[in-house]
Amino acid sequence: MNSKYLSDKTVESVLAADRDVSNEISDEGNVLVATAPYQAEFPYERDDEAQVTRREFCNFLFLTSSALFLGSAGFAGKLAYNASFEPDFTPLKIAGADSLAPGTALNFHYPEEKDSAILIRAADGKYYAFDQKCTHLTCPVYYAKDQDQLECPCHEGGFDVHTGNVLYGPPPRPLDQIQIEVRQGDEIWAIGKITGGGHESA
Amino acid sequence: MNQLRERDKQPDERHLTRGRAAIWQARLVLLVMINIAQLWILSATIEAALAAHYKQLVPLIVASGVCWVIALTIFLWWKPSERQSRGPERH
Figure 1 (spheres, rainbow over the protein chains, first blue to last red):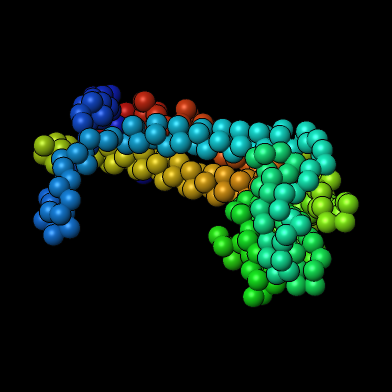
Figure 2: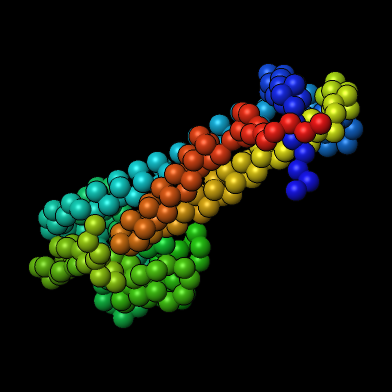
């Protein structure tokens, strides 16, 4: 075997040199000088490049990893916890629905004030109501009269105006449907909500 | 200054220092890769949660946790050894 062993003195001197290096601001020896035009436009202190040691950067990366883990768990936990509560579907009269012309839509809030919903009167005169949150990333959908469909402007998702089913785009499931009822001839009431595509238990 | 120090070292010393530097670089690269994976997992978690696909959340959180444990082991234990283990001195 041709391995070469080091003397105590050699090892000590190397470790001492390493300690000296790690105690310095940085062990980077070839920091570039700011010469390019874009560097002149943004007067970034090139000496600052050497202010972060590998050790500090490792610490930062580990803290970032911890934050990402906690963020994932916290976000998922909070949404799943919120979804475990069934809201109270108190019947609500949708104001202004009686004067809605065919091929138009109006927004309302149901079942709570923070839950935005959309009521559509299709060209055939029938009413349809949906939760306005896109099932992809909860952007608000709007009624596109020309195409007679609901569209999400964020990622170009499309939904059928009669069923809430996905026509195209990234949404993974149909829109949540608001159950409506016609009372006293022309009053439109929201009476409940059906989760599109079936509800998964939290 | 560092270049001077590097030049003055014996070949064995340079080899040892470069080895330690390589380990530090490897730690950094691994941690960066783990961070990127966790970013992807976070975005997938957000998408699944907003789409009410709650059954996908547990595996995603477990995956993020595994990444974090690996990062923890790199952070705590995968370091250059403080002292070189040596055999008998040869003359």
